[in-house]
Image 1 (cartoon, helix red, strand yellow):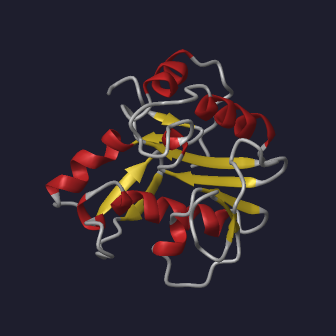
Image 2 (cartoon, one colour):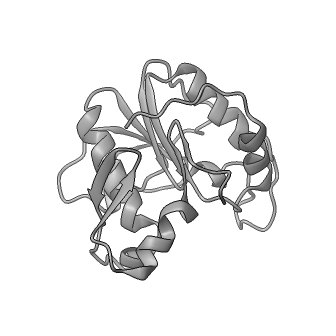
Image 3 (cartoon, one colour):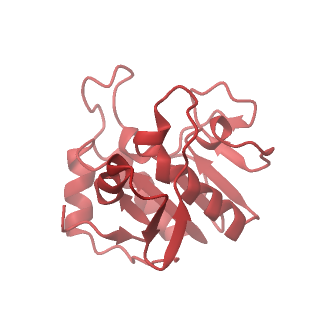
Length: 178
């Protein structure tokens, strides 16, 4: 996983996961940013999986870019103690804040886009048995990168082989926001 560093921000789960499992550290670093791990347990063993660092990064993004935020995939509503006011794009989730539209169809122009472990699921069939449309995640990624004001996109490497290959060979403009 040495090839995966920090993509404008597409952060490899594996990059931070090792420190999470060790459990020795109360804080983690991404670039110059140092945050505390999320240690609550909401039933998904968040204290030892990728949510332990995704949630603090999501909080950081909401605090830094507190206007025109849209979340691709309903994640933060299940982990935030404060009330949320940002838009959430998720065609399936029943959260009241969700706009039930396809993430590929949404207009991200001048929006601050946050996505936590969602991008790699785009294009899969409903049972996650096979990828019906392998390019859907890539098209959505390109749309966000080319139109959003700022973005923090985190996805699991190895979950969507075509997305992984695309990122390795990509010439997308990568910016580190930290």
